[in-house]
Image 1 (cartoon, rainbow, N blue to C red):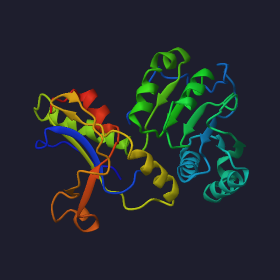
Image 2: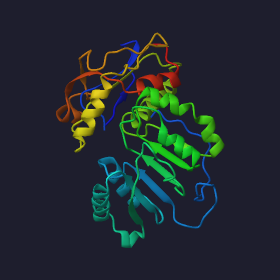
Image 3: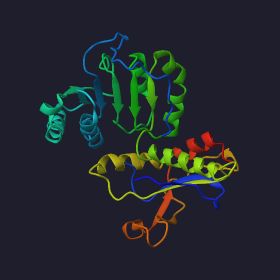
Length: 298
């Protein structure tokens, strides 16, 4: 769960967490509504979606959600490196979804996300969850090259997002709608922060001065080893911070311990469920991207 809150005390924008991570998103021109192949040809087949990292916890959960919520038949491809895990993931999704009633198709395709090659030909939508996203946006670049209409990932490093945003013109040229960091935090947390800022404006505030993100996660959802790797990488990244209206990142990951009340008052169910927790600074990008969009001065 993510919580974004605007405060009037800290005179800074920062991020912290008291658990493990499960938008800064940019959007290019909307893709054509009809399914297309990699070369842009219209087809009559059902939409073909590839979930890169589809054998993991996020991938299988996303597959189940998409197939249950779709308004028509889908062809879903779970993509990953390990065939055995792929077969198991397909069976896991089938157990959750009534394929006969919904007329979906699901399969596994062996793909190394670091060398995507021509695996994306004919794909209408690509969901990339194969982290960690510590490097260049290779998959996004390949998606643009193949002119995939819709691309979504759950990336979070600032360096990755800056490199992705630099591809916006290319995305417009290929008519790709690309959404980066579409997770819980970053992702939904950004939306909450923007909503809070808009409500302050509606209440008469002319500008947002300070912004702080603090998170508590109740568990890892079975993704312990991956989260451990991501955490170890995070200690080497600068924490996004804004001070006095200027971007001033600092090497402070895992430090600056403080306490946060994750409730409004004692009548709030979160008072008993979560309460007061210790949090520490961490390099989540929303503390760098949301203030940039809002042009905060604190």
